[in-house]
Image (cartoon, rainbow, N blue to C red; front, side, top):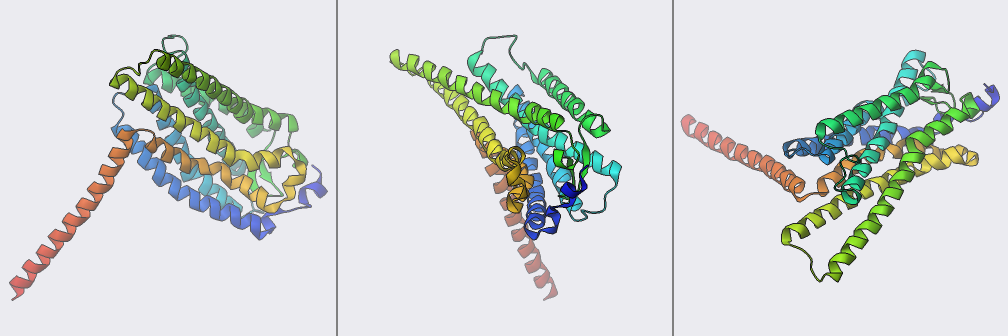
Length: 331
């Protein structure tokens, strides 16, 4: 490792970087736990019939819950003691943190593929996620593959997960501080580049397929039955939701990609701080978009809040009645 390079610019000594990371992680974490917990609860009570789409969205919420309850809080706590690190724990934390980040992208990739198969190949028995059991198996196999990709860096065989001197945190070490550029580029390609590119191509193909279907409907001067119209509207809403998740995910990762691809931008303190916290903001946008994707979810959410208000109102009424009864007894 080049010591002069490693210690020339210490980000954690700059208030802009330190405060951005600490405040961002501590704010996103608790709010993300609440939003994803509510979303997972709504999905679970509306699970029947349990489809591949709902199963994958439950995986999205589960991954986000782990990121918000462990990944982000421990990253903020880790940032508060930048110069004191236990090597084994630092490696473990970096492994889990990057696993959650990478798996979050891959789950969105599976959600996109599911929509693609439903729209483009609706009658295919080979290109499908099938039922919930098959979907769970595919999701767990994908998780295992991602763990195998990160394992060489965790063991120090290829790439390095550990303490980065410039940021004072447990991350995937950059080339400037002794990391392996080939592994870092491969990891970025496997966990971000290839999935995002494939997702964009899938949505582009979906757009042309839906456009062609709409043209056929218009040429036939028929919009189908009301049930068919409702199905098409629901499918369009789901496509809009999943595409919105992808676009927000890309926007959140944009500062990270800029810092990673352009070395001259790595010393821009605020940009470096944003590149650390913005990838976690998808934990807030995913559950919101998910709950807005179906009328059933929105109705359940409204009923849940109305039920809470009704309980508070009933408690207030019963409390006032009890107080009046107590006052009468005292008289």
